[in-house]
Length: 570
Image 1 (cartoon, rainbow, N blue to C red):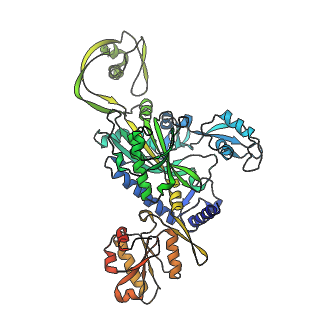
Image 2 (cartoon, rainbow, N blue to C red):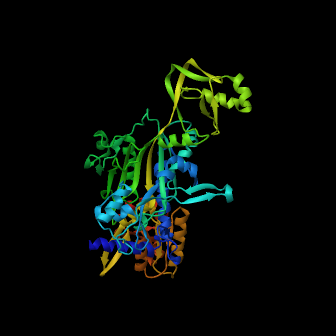
Image 3 (cartoon, rainbow, N blue to C red):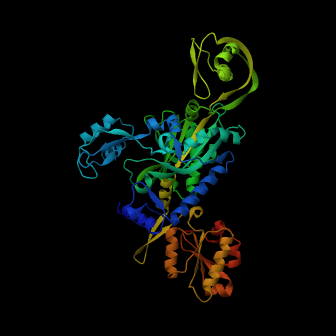
């Protein structure tokens, strides 16, 4: 246990001291739930997101979109966030501090997700849970608190109610017609979006794990539920620790699908692709597990949902969620949007003859009655999915207005039609990535603490694709022409696209240590032999092994394949 505490202390110190992650607005006392990414952290975050984009865009049936973070109230009412996006809040009657009710009980009872407000109140009283701030154990009745940040768009009385978005998903759903058109009305297809989400957490804690402003990376993958895409799950050979509704087990994704534990093959495919990505950017897969949502925690619209949880100093933390959302979101937006068209067309292999009833308006009556609006009334009548069962009935027009129709204005007639296809609402699989949580676990899984000369020697073994710098160029000393040669090498490497750290401050050993702390994978040392032989010492971060290489070879070499020049690591 002591080793883990020390590791946590070392990691937090390193992240702050070396400009990875630190509390936001620290010069003003800080604000809980907000963080700054410093120079090294912002570089790692940017390269992580670039790698995430490349991973999904390489499929060919996925594109990227970008939508506003401020979202009109109507959109989030349709999605259900206005009515139901809340956590339980309990206030201490001793000091007035506010806390999440379930978090207060987790220390005593473990997970209490899904409990009613009355059950939370009863448990707080029964176990005499103490306030973390003052130690009192008397609580106000728990109440729901909506987590969205409210705002207004525009000035004065004409201001439009809006919120800072709690997720990026709704921007992709409302843009579905554009995404579908981009792919020439063919499914399956998908869209990714990277950006900030905002949740006014009651009691944010655990640093990067629970934030009020956080980075999200989400994918919405749309498909025809009657033409389910075929996937190859045999490509994923790794056995994973799984916690399903049937129990705990270790299986490949293909085995889980065949056994019915993971019924949707698209969820299994997205999990496989997600885990491949996480491994590539430095997550230890032996410290991951796949957990299926229980019935009492699954969203009402979801038919299945799995989390990728990563183990670290804060225990098991949900970092990716992959859900089968059905057609719920598109259906909600179609019903709420005055002009939305969220359906796709499914052509039949052969035309079908159908007999049905339609409502036909009487233009001789509707024309004088509705004048310029009569054409829209006629169109709305002919487009009704179901004929009325009683007269009069209310007809909704495309602008959201309503008119009353009686039996003198229209009639029900029988028609035979040749139908070539049907309109339907696509279904969607959604992988949602908590970027900050994943980055925290990358830092933790990459941390190496060794003993050198009686002192702790810290190294971040970051994946080379996400390090702040690709390579460091260090002259042994900044004189005798060594500094000039190092500068030439640095500029040549930058010209070929590498991100280069050029450091001349302090002893060479101290500079090695600084580079190891921030995860620079390769160090080129320019010494006096470099001036005579046109070569440099190349040092590998992960084990400190060194070889000599001609400068001419190095400048023509892709740094990503430099590993091949080194002996295997022991």
